[in-house]
Length: 364
Image 1 (tube, rainbow, N blue to C red):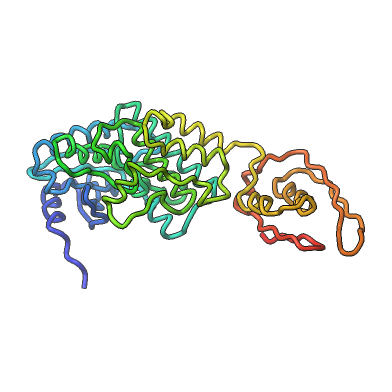
Image 2 (tube, one colour):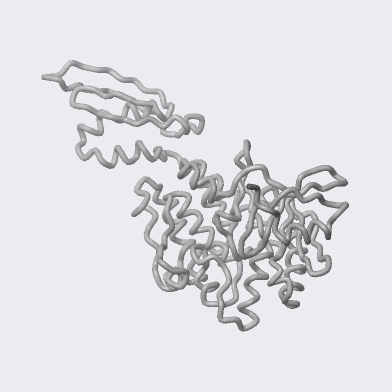
């Protein structure tokens, strides 16, 4: 039996009749209800996000939502979901935005697991670029998390959504509420304490998104939201390399700096974060995670001599290999590697390397 549309569906459809044709509800949360709709005049699909009626009934929050949403609508960037219109009709307050064909970062992680190092860094860099643009316009997101990062089908492009809404939700703190509004798993310490926030709060949240994307797990876990908030305030995040040993040291250090408890001790701008991520992608001599782990685990010099020629082949470097008969089953290898630059065209074909007493074989 098909579920009947919600009361909000009928109320909104009646309010926008002739302009938008609602098709179905596609999402619901504490910050709004999202409907798939068709723009009648332009004959295109859009998403309409309705402010929860309980919040729309509070005049101060309603006014601030409209003000912040209109500010966010001015943002124009390839990695930000554009807002087409911000409206209030009767008791309803909503905005119309582009419909992205794809899935959220959360859905991607749940359905397919973690990312390759290259892909994770690319996504994080695109999110950082989006935040650079927003911060330049005076807009702080306040709720950077995987649910608010969309990955476009086909291109894989990352787009950040829900600018402005978290600012409104956070206004409850300014009004003297004892509740802290936000997402505990991704909330900065200053936001958890109900203090004023700036772009460095978004940097902290981006650091947690980075930790999750690169390791497959969150830095903090707890049984209740209150415990999570306490950990965000008091507990130092574990080093990324402790849960994802193959992570490059510079990248782990970057995440560590994003997750400093004191805003003044963090990286100060998303532009600096983006530049550091770009450098991570372009680092010379950076071995793929699988190969780097194997090298770390081979303790003796003779073991390493056996795998160097294969690493050079994987990196696309010219290699001269000669085999000389030796006593028993041992082989002596000569090699010359002129370049250690990693070829991005091979990143999807990372080999699993095995070594045995008398031979080396590779599985692709």
